[in-house]
Amino acid sequence: MSAGIPFVPPSEPAWRSLHPNAVVVERRVGLVVTALIALVSLVTGGLALLADNTPGWVKILVALGWLAIVFGLAWLSWMMPVRRFRYTRYRVDSLGLLIHRGRLFHSELGVARSRIQHSDVTQGPIQRAYGIATLTIYTAGTEDAQVDLSGIAFDEARRLRAELTGQSSDDVV
Image (tube, rainbow, N blue to C red; front, side, top):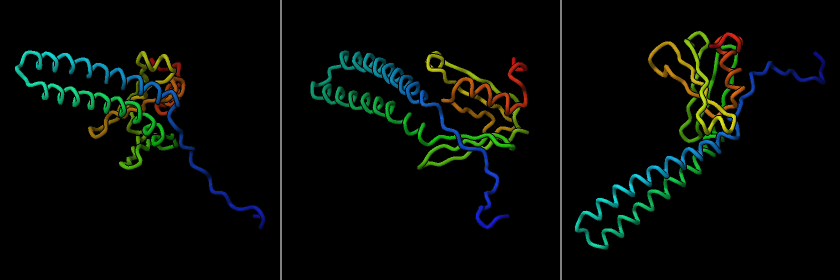
């Protein structure tokens, strides 16, 4: 070894981030869910308040509380996907799949290739519109027997499924 060339140990596979469209998809899904919750709670709460002999100040407090909850849910639906995107990464190595999630509440989940039973790649309508998918891996055992990795490109999900299960994409049903 030459004195001028430093030794570089073999590197591990690089960590990969979720697809940037995952933020858009999760925001849209979150806002749809928020709108549905707002609509259902408005109808049921409105009917309950109209049917009752409730004083006006109580109705105003209930309306302000409803607005606070709806805007809080909308804010969370807008902000949480960015944090999830920023603090979720994954990689595949010779042992299997490793998923790292979170910053404050940190978790690392490893899925050994030898424990993988089968896997699925799914897309909802909003995911399909943005070209992303969810890779679901089913493992032997009961603890974390289903592992989901959502927010990755559809082609990447199919490639990961084939790599982890040892099948070519033509072998998958």
